[in-house]
Length: 381
Image 1 (cartoon, rainbow, N blue to C red):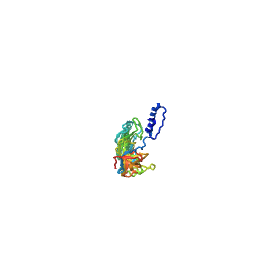
Image 2: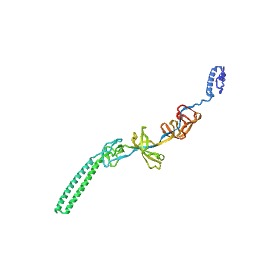
Image 3: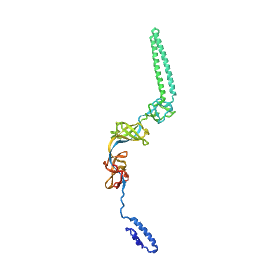
Image 4: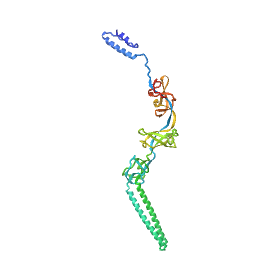
């Protein structure tokens, strides 16, 4: 069999290879070359049948009606319910001891900062001595007035002299009152040398160090009154009417833990620029939340009957939500929907899908519009 016969018997019909071999010595090499060319030609054009169509295996689910909790999602910050700025009324004294640190829990009346009391103690003793002297002078003036009254009855002194004695008694009593007031003021200033907590709470800020000269009226500490925190969020005017005092709100702590709050107040005024209003929620047990943190909250505003589908059925592409609806012949059609908030393993469908329509559940993320699918067990109606 020559090379031409071998090629005609083994090459594909679409390819024709012509090779002339003039020398018998190169015939074996020509056979090998022709065989390689024939195999390449066959692999390039072999198989005239169309490839079999493949289909993706999926499961189905159906849109259904369910009663779900209606929620308003808002973002806000955690803040102190009331944060008190603490300072002292005296000035020019040195801080002797700072007894608390930020984060410390304190009770009403607890000493927080102690100032150097020596100057105030000296002033108090001086005031006490002045008071004692004034009282002694008052006693003498009263005694002189009584003797003068006796002498006046005997006509031993004139009425004018007796009036002088009475005036001296009144002046001495006034000096006693003045000295008493000065003594009380000095005692009060001495009490100001110790800064005490006005209420139970948590120290949030410390602006004083031992040895620092204190200026009256300056902020030394900040106290979160009763350790009470609240969540303040801006809510749009369209959602504001659905939020009521006493409604609950769910927040997420920094570690993902759930923190519950109760709406205590809704601002009566709306910001004309942002068209939003503030909502205040008490956080009885804030957990790991701290003042100044940012948190997203879900405010429960009631229940409603809505259409839902399994969350895995929704595919997010190009910023929109889609589902794949099963059509005739196993073909799926991509349909855009308006999805709402997740409800556990389900998601709300606001528009674009009717109750009872079958959509792809498992496998939706791998589909394109018009794909042929194979449905397996797992359909839930």
